[in-house]
Image (cartoon, rainbow, N blue to C red):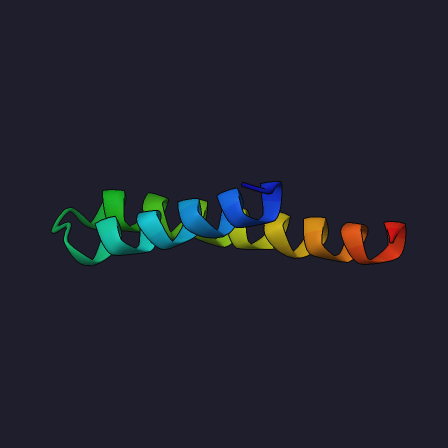
Length: 52
């Protein structure tokens, strides 16, 4: 599994958890984590494209 795939999977998992959670603070933190993972994945993808 590449770093990009790992980060995408973590973001998807956090978003699924956020949809099934009732606590607003937890939802906010999970969605922030998902956004951070997606941003890092985007950077990883861009970095991989320039390295190739």
